[in-house]
Amino acid sequence: MALTILVTGATAGFGAAMVRRFIGDGHRVIAAARRMERLQALRSEFGEAVLPLALDITDAAAVAALPNSLPPNWRQVDVLVNNAGMAVGLDPAHKARVADWDRMVAVNVSGMLHMTHALLPGMVERNRGHIVNISSTAAIYPYPGGHVYGASKAFVTQFSLNLRADLVGTGVRVTDLEPGLVGGTEFSVNRFGGDTARASAVYAGTVPLSADDIAEAASWVVNLPAHMNINRMEIMPTCQAPGPLAIKRT
Image (cartoon, rainbow, N blue to C red; front, top):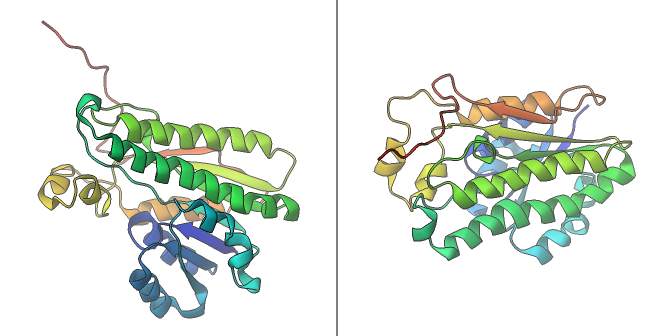
């Protein structure tokens, strides 16, 4: 069955890869992002299979108005992929900027919550739907400089599990995807304020996951039979694994 899928952060990285994969699967996609020129490029590439949607998920009023502002034949959203997210900086907490913390919370937590709250009632009413939240292995495994980013993704993971508990008895599924090291996206470039050399150093000597790998995972969970729910999926490249606890020796 062809689905109507809304993907946030749809113009780069995981989002763009998922748009392409979902359309390749035979679905149609509401591609939501802030950069309209990139949205129009997706529209030019895929035609009527894509509905470009200029949206800042931190704009609570715009998100709340979303269900009734979509064209009538696009309003029954079957799948919401809360993909939009960000990390800013890698300084230790005592040197970090509060403004950067606020930006991460606004996008990773509040934006995800508002999008879910806007579209979930319709899914419950129709007794079908799927919320796919993009978390991170940083939600589970801490690392220096990951303070608010990791905490915000831990919120995503725990919210996903509790949301699933609320939805038992409905036909609405909830999945939390937790990628580890992923290269070839704008994530680290944005994290380091456009410093491409520093961003590239993160992946030096590794074979990281790609955005297409995460799109593959999203495609799999979305296309499973309706009675199957993947609660959590932790995904790492073979070059990455959880490490030992840090110990400071004198």
